[in-house]
Length: 272
Image (cartoon, rainbow, N blue to C red; front, side, top):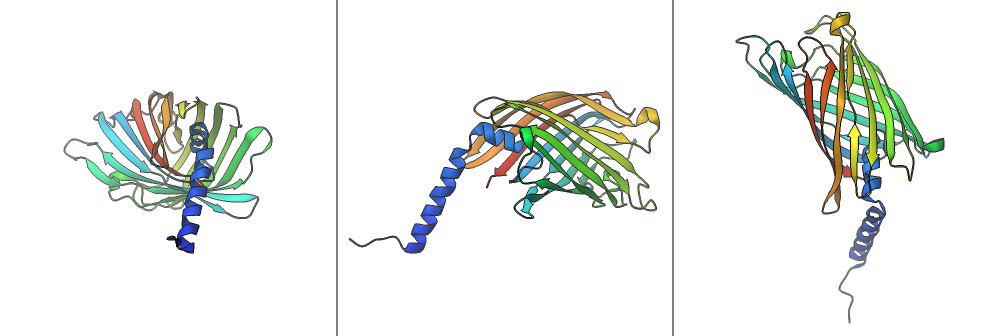
């Protein structure tokens, strides 16, 4: 009987089986830990929605959908370059009576981390690099027209067999000019994260985003949230999807800042 499969088709089928086997070896818990590593060596596309309540002088509701593709590049066998882009699609409530609300794209931020390809002793992982802010806002109320640049770094602990994943990401962005709309800025961000992973891809998480506007008065400078949430790995066919929902209360915030936030995320993962 003749072989009905051509050699090329056999090769493609064999490759598909190998890829399926490789993904099958990665448990849902391992996938969850991989998703919790900001400099993990995988392509992923998170959609993170942040709804901020009682924002602005009129106590409106602000909504920011961050589209955050993460793309790693292999520099050599010892080092990876991890790029992380944040594209904010924003709904800005009315800030002054009669002004009306705004909807559009905010300022895109691009981070690039140089990170060792293998974890250090005890599962220590780190990355360091630069962050660029681009004046891509489609409305004056959605961002600043001055370019920005600064350093960024991340360090975390992720051990095989240990359910805890924890660490911190920091950056600071300075404006490169001050003569365009919005003027000078100097913004700090720190995001500590703490995750506890259960078998099956379920996990508890806390990742508050602490910010400081160094150009503001000292009593209007900081936003400090407290809170947490829950996450779970699902599969759409063979595609892993990391889902997460949480709530954060701002124990410190500027007078016109939101007092609490609801955060929801869907992350499409493409592990190697």
